[in-house]
Length: 320
Picture 1: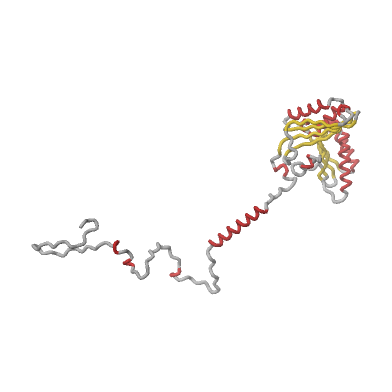
Picture 2: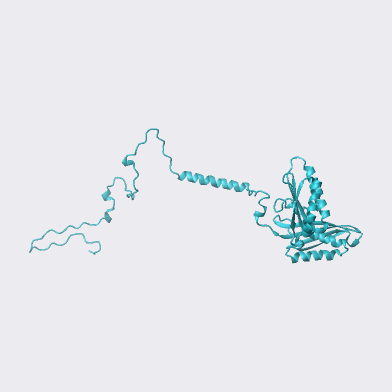
C-alpha cells in the first residue's frame, strides 16, 4: 500500500544518467561520504544561486564537479573570483585537484527542483500556498510543459492538523519508462513547522535510442517458447523438403578417373512415343474404321469397249 518509486531512480540507466560517475574497489564508503558532504556543502553555500543539480566525476585522483544553475553569474563572480575561491576551498577539504564546470539552466520554469525551491521560498515569505502552487503550474504550462503536478504537505497556513494538497495539469505517465519526467523536492522551514514540496514535470517521450546508447546495452528481444518450437518445426520441414529434392550424390571412385562412354552421356529429352498394347504391330495401332480406304487407279480400257459399272466402295460422304 502506498509504495512509491522515485521517478529518477526508476529510469536510471534507461534514459537518465548517473549523478555520480566513479568506480572504487577499496574505500567505497569514504568516497560516498565525501560525495554526500560535498553536495550538501555546495547546496548550502550556493542557496541563492538556484542550483538544480550537482554531478561528480572522479577521473583518477582528480575531482570534477558539474553544477547546473539558473544564475551562473553568482557562482562565477566578478572576473571568476568566486569560483576560484570555491575551487581552493574544495581542494583543501578533499585534498584532491578540483575542476568545476558551470552549466546554465535556460528555462528554470521547466526544472522540477527549481520549481519546488521557488515554492518553498514563497511559503517561507508567508505567501498563500494555493497561490504559489497555481503560479508554478501556469508558468510551466506556458513554457511548453506537457504536464505538471505539485504537492505540498505539512501544517498549511499554520493549521493544527497537517494535510496534503496537490494540483495536476496535463498528463503525467509515471509508469511509462520512455517518458521524460523530472522530479524535485524541497523543504520550507516556516515558523509553524516544516512543509515539504514535491514537483513532477512531464516533458515528453524520449524515442531516440541514441540518447541512451552509452547507458545500457540494447537487450535482446524475448523469445516465446511456443514461437521457438514452431520456428524449429518449420526449419525441419524445409530441410527435409530440400533433402528430398536434392540430387543423389555420386558414388565415390577409388580408381583413376575415367570418361563415360558416349551411350551413357545425357541426351536431350525427346517427345515420348505413344504406349501401344501388347502383341500389336505399330502399323495396326489404329482401328479399322479409322483407316482410310485405298483407291486404285482404274485399268486402261480399249477404245470402243463399253464401260463397266463402277463397283468400288463409295466415298464416305456420298449416299448409295
